[in-house]
Image 1: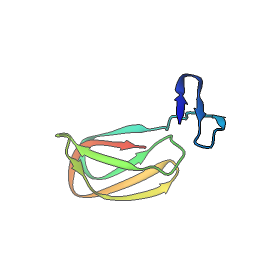
Image 2 (image 1 turned 90 degrees about the vertical axis):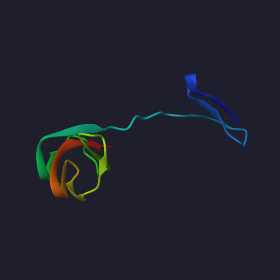
Image 3 (image 1 turned 135 degrees about the vertical axis):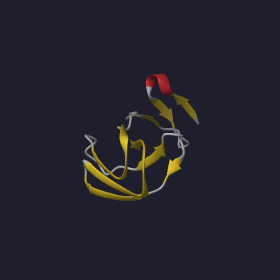
Image 4 (image 1 turned 180 degrees about the vertical axis):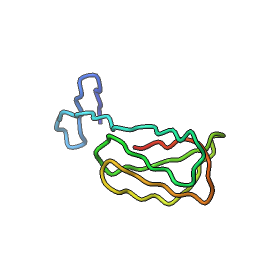
Length: 88
């Protein structure tokens, strides 16, 4: 199998050629400055997102995530803290 990414051409195992369209996924980073046990995040991604939360030390923190719609997420934690959420 040969791949020519510069020309977006892919040679498949069945011997046929096809064009590949590379689409970059949208993401946003939300910063929670004041410590809080509930983060309300309004974003502009217009899709159901996955979320990774880290505290100010860079430790991944788990919470209860509620996706209200394609542009709003609420995350509830057991204790208040500051950090960031990466929405992808």
